[in-house]
Image 1 (tube, one colour):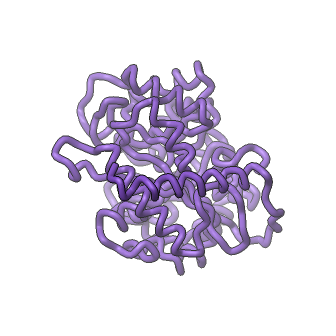
Image 2 (image 1 turned 135 degrees about the vertical axis):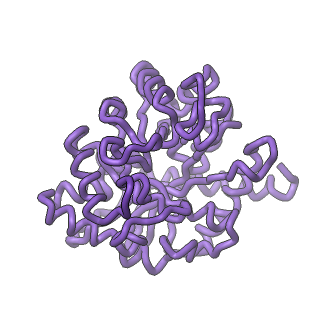
Length: 341
């Protein structure tokens, strides 16, 4: 880390510590206004800002500030994603440091966003950070990143790494011993282990090990494989094993993960939600749109302003308003902030 960055990270760490303290003190009561508030578990604004050169308040247009306001967004998880192309030898922890510093600065500059944590203020959006494909992470690094606001640790992306195998490439292993050590530290700090990009073998091993150490496994942006046959999606059995750890499956809006062989529609997303609820129960389903992740979004669900369309479609399909609220925000908040939030 450069000398110029060290004071910045020291200041950020102190500020985040204050935010964490505030989050543990309590939060103001929020009246239910009839709006379906949204907590999205996976929106790639940091990628668009840091690596594609787009404005943080606009991104590609899928999660711009005006659209998230119209869509009823209450909270968002922002992955500190680093493309594999950045270094010939792959991602470095210094890349995640840079992404963190630049994104945190943007949260401060745009008043609609709160710093990472669970403390609520009317009209402002809660934020949390996540990792995706953080192969360089060691067990000794986990606590530091948790203090900086990383709540979700995705160990795999589209490549195998030193922690876990990927669903996107051939592999002959699931989780390494280093990966288990990292999982153990994530569990100690109360973090969540994301297996969205992991191989079936890695998810199988992760959920089994999570049961042994009391960790929670989630899939922030994956769908049911039975409705869209893709290695990034989950079998019914894997979804049940994730739910058994207390985790959730976040519904992804990328067309190829919703249905195969034709353009996906809003009705297809409804089918994914209803099917997943049928497999694991409504307590274990959430939203993880993958907006801003270079996705091809579903027709009728193209950006953050479209969340209310999905809410109404789910109610029309037979889900109760209470169930939709659970799926749209309460299940995610339970894991991000605690049972009583």
